[in-house]
Amino acid sequence: MKTITSIILLVFSLTAFAQNEMITNKGIVTFEASIPLYEENKAVNETVYCILNIKTGEIKSLVLIKDFQFKIPLMEEHFNEIYLESNRYPKAIFKGKIQGFNWNIIGTKPKEFEIKGKLEIHGKRKEITSIIVLRKVNNDLELLSNFNIDLKDFNIKIPKILSIKIAETANIKTSYLLK
Image (cartoon, rainbow, N blue to C red; front, side, top):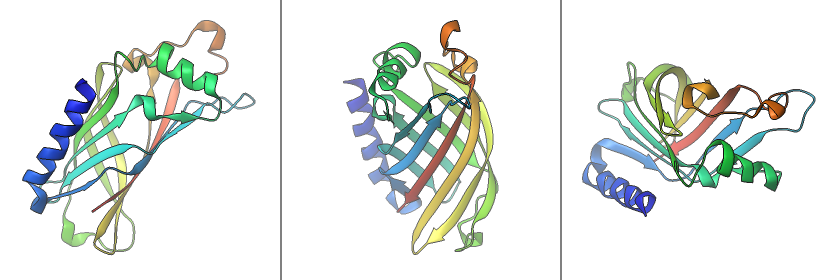
């Protein structure tokens, strides 16, 4: 119920500031904690929400943990029930700012910016600094990022017996097309 309420509030806040904000409820977030020579430990989530204030460069993103899809159902079950406890911590949230963001200097060629903010996963928050790549696609804005997180920073514990199959550092890739 809290998740539905959060999404409804997010949608209402979007309409209030529509002239200064670009949004999407479709994108791709990939989570990968694979170890070479073992089964791929990778999931994709296409139910994501992102808002960018084009005046300030402030950005917010919300991802529902249960919407990550793995190739192997048992991995998905363990991801949700054991590692990320998605019933208890149903979403990942990023709130930050794109440094030096200026709508007028972004063109059709990819341009790199630094992004800083707080990422919340599994009930823990951590400062994140990464590179984000922006480019205009017609009147839309494409955002791409690729960064790593240490699972221990978010209190995500991997059982000793599985630590040879699951990386301690996960790679997160995002791709949004904001309108």
